[in-house]
Image 1 (tube, rainbow, N blue to C red):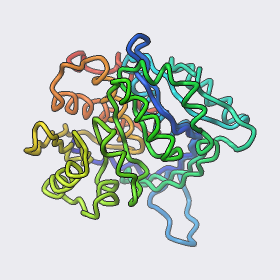
Image 2 (tube, rainbow, N blue to C red; image 1 turned 180 degrees about the horizontal axis):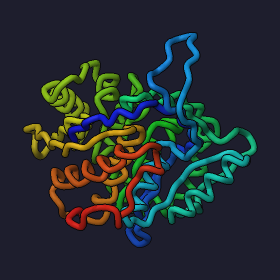
Image 3 (cartoon, rainbow, N blue to C red; image 1 turned 90 degrees about the horizontal axis):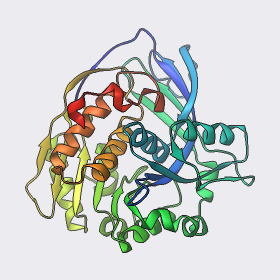
Image 4 (cartoon, helix red, strand yellow; image 1 turned 60 degrees about the horizontal axis):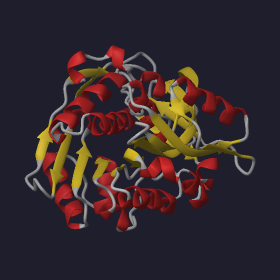
Amino acid sequence: MLLETLRPRFSSCQACFFTSAIMTLPLELNVDANITERRIESCLTTRLPRAGETILGHKFFIGFGGKGANQCVQSARLGAKTSLICKVGNDSFGNDYVENLKKNGISTAFVGQTADAATGTASIIVNSEGQNVIVIVPGANLLLNFEDLKRASDVICKAKVVVCQLEITPAVSLEALKMARASGVKTLFNPAPALPDLDPQFYTHSDIFCCNETEAEILTGIPVGNLEDAEKVGHMLLERGCKLVIVTLGAEGCMMISVEEPIPKHVPAGKVRAVDTTGAGDSFVGALAFYLAYYPKLPMEEMIRKSNCVASVSVQASGTQSSYPFRKDLAQDLF
């Protein structure tokens, strides 16, 4: 999508809870399971501060975030029955997060609470261009373990789609992908935050491998500044064992390439006025998971186009989950 920035007079600072999770869309249950929860604190400012500098902000708010939880919320708001597999602290932030998930219609049967760590948090500063910097403290997210996956195995193995990220221990995400693939469940992997030494098994156990420009560069060493660079990344990831690669390009839309269709395709995005791009990538992934589960016969290019449309709505409002659209807010031709 082409993002035309809406320049507010001041930028903002956000604070959020977060959960990183595994999201599943089960066959019988039509559930989306994801892993990640986080409290997010956000600040709006005119510009990002330099090292050692104190600047005035315009707005501060606290919300909910985390890649897995964000993706799960977006899928649920489009109408998916979703489930989140994650761990939060046994604290007020964790309690609030569980209630937030329930309010969004997400199954919390496998949302664990622990006294051994606090709920994960993130501090976000957003400037007047809609750009942001983020610091994450994972907390309880890193305590999600293999035993938690075993307890949730029925949901994972009966899903339509399982979505994983890297905000929990990578080995746990990889095991979830393996469990899903062994049961014939479609897997969607978002390698964020990216690791330069990512276990090669992630490539081979992901039906769809979806990364942004920054993640693509960390994974391949190729700076992505244009569509041609994204195509080079796509070819390299196919060589590593990926079946279908999507590189999201912000305002320029997406590049997709697959083993079955090795000629790269550019899926452009519509032009919108962006206020805050925080969480737009998660909105895209959550929407894509929804279309994979509920409209599996759609061409992948069309799924990506529709997901771009959903994400483009989210950037037109401040906040992360609070900016995610509900099905009723979207054009009917998206469904």
